[in-house]
Amino acid sequence: MFVLILAELLTATSSSPSMLPLAEVSVATDVPATRKVCRDEKLPNSRFMRRVCTVVKAKQVAVETAPQPPVAPVAPVMTTFGIGMDVVDGQGMAVGVLTAVAADSVTVKTDRHQAQLPKSSLTISDGKALFGMTQAELNASVENSLASTATAALAIGAEVKGKGGTPIGTVDSATGDSVTIKLAGGQKISIPRSGIAIGADGSGTIGITAAELEAQVRAVRPAG
Image 1 (cartoon, rainbow, N blue to C red):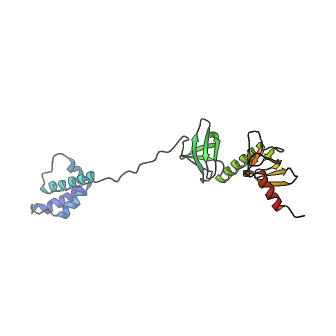
Image 2: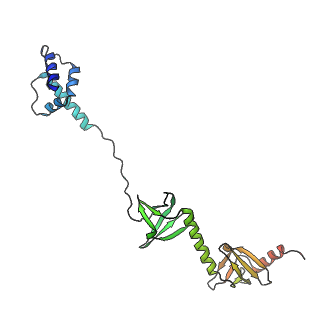
Image 3: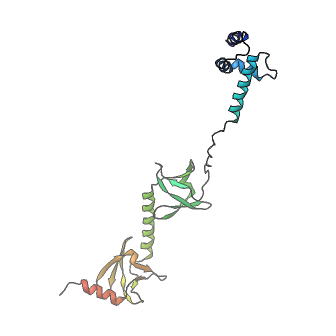
């Protein structure tokens, strides 16, 4: 096809060498064989083909110098545990973020707590740490552990003092949320677990004095 096209073009221009139709030049430059001829160092003798080759080379230069679209940088994918790594559950939902990494453990910060977990309980996938609990489940586990520790530290029968150190009674029972105190007069009161501090000797101290506590007890004691 290339030979036929060139033959027709050369015939059409041989009768009038000064006329080189732009339409024919455009057609010829798009023929693969024409581009091959124009890549040769020696230009064709035909005036028409020389003009064709000039257009071909101009197109090639335009293609080579055209600005290329910028390549977006690819963020590196983390393959080892690192501070700031996202922790997700099996459904891809957020659990927390790593805030510390040790030899055998990591610390995960959720929306409410920080939990130290063994590295073996997490796996890395696509730059994130996969964990077998949801955020709510991990929070509940941490809270249960804290409650158990607090209850164990506050022994039944331990002395309870008021602010200032005056004894007011003893621990009658304790849960993760509250402590029941048996006062010296035999009455029992319940206070939030957060309202009593445990001393080094195992005794508990509340945030009001013995006199203030007695006044509150009298205020709620039934008349008679």
